[in-house]
Image 1 (cartoon, rainbow, N blue to C red):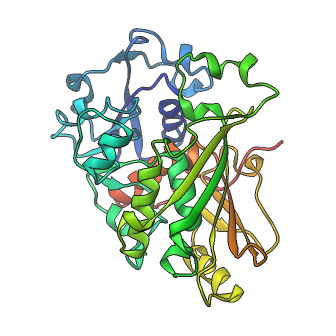
Image 2 (cartoon, helix red, strand yellow; image 1 turned 60 degrees about the vertical axis):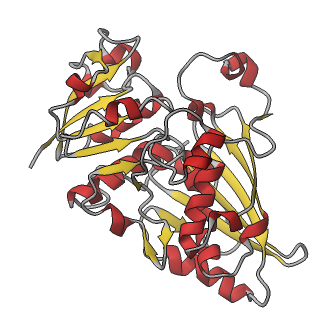
Length: 350
């Protein structure tokens, strides 16, 4: 069966990456692409690397244009998806790459986003530990999927095994992330200009203000069937001069009595059979270059007994595993297709 697809926000980074992956998917027909200010222009004018889609023209983003497809992807700025999802009830599968349907707590939404709160959808991180199982089981047959925030899923995947196995203390998590500016979208902003980025590293959303914090707390709480109130995290992202990628260094105290073997076994047990989340051999740590263009999260673990902390370093491509790859992987599960269809573990080098 071939599924017809519409992608909104198709002129942006996330929308373009969704299209790049779907273009190689044998079960997908990309029928419609939409945008706002860029409507009426050829898709390749904004996504010149998508040569196989040169026949497509960006249309207006309206419920009427998005309706009538088997699958709709929404790659819109936070706070804009809800106005469309409410009107797409007849579409069999809708996947939102924005934040509108990620959070289960309206209080958390009000504190970090504001605006209208929308019902939470099935969270699109298949490998995430949830109440003794994996999130992929909830994605099978799902009709509404919330793709994750790239920083949030990176940190959640990094620490969920330790939280679920009770080998780390989740009340004192510290994570610092080096992130590429593509995670901030394609809109023109002074602090994202090349002249402002090259040769420097810039922290932002310092002091517990980043919008992905409640998403991380929600995911880690689900890993242990606990309350998000028990998850305390100091989260500091830093923009660095690489177009795409996240390198997240996350630490948490070692739980009383946890041995080195128990700690490493928690991550090996969680990800030993996974295709797209891979734990590196002891003593090895990933680089962002190793995941460029791939749907992989590579991670390394160190046990710092002097500081009594576990250190997890994880690399992802924020546009692939962090966003579009997670969305397509979740789509495959929802449709009953092979989970890895149109996705690769191979990066691009050099």
